[in-house]
Amino acid sequence: MPHPGLPERLPADFPAALAQLGEAEKIGVEEMKLLILLEMAGEPLYGKLAELAGNEESREILLKNGREETAHAHRLKKAIEILTGEEFEIPPMSANPYAAAPPLTELSVEVLRGLEEGEKKGGVDYERMAAAETNAEIAELLRQNGREETKHGERVSTVIDLLG
Ligand SMILES: [Fe+2]
Ligand SMILES: [Fe+2]
Image (cartoon, rainbow, N blue to C red; front, side, top):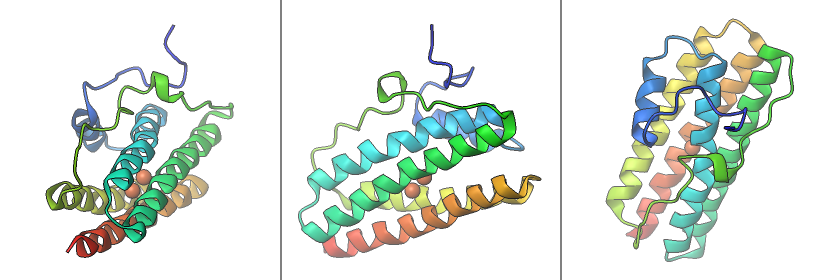
């Protein structure tokens, strides 16, 4: 039996999942479940990038972003619990189809630029979801995530500068 925290529809890969979320008019429980999987995939991704980083400052920045992605998933868990009135369990990494870190062998500017764009877009998307949300507590959780995604983009930009 699939983990009860998984959404009903599981897009094939990370970009397909992002596209599906982009089409959703308003974020509901199913969208939040999918978003939780993407957020939880963020920490192993940043962990992989940190491993490849050539200096301590970059490593720390990347690990910090990663930890905050997990915190984003926990805010979404809280939002689901507010909506449903029931306890929600985040699926373990083993049940998360998006959690495998990409097979990167070096930290390239291209990869970091893509990530920077994705984070900036994440900030805008969360802000849009927050604006459409009628529950004030949930809207604030989404807004907090959005502010941090924007900050993540700025931090990734610092890592690009450090790369020289
Ligand atoms: Fe995030
Ligand atoms: Fe982020």
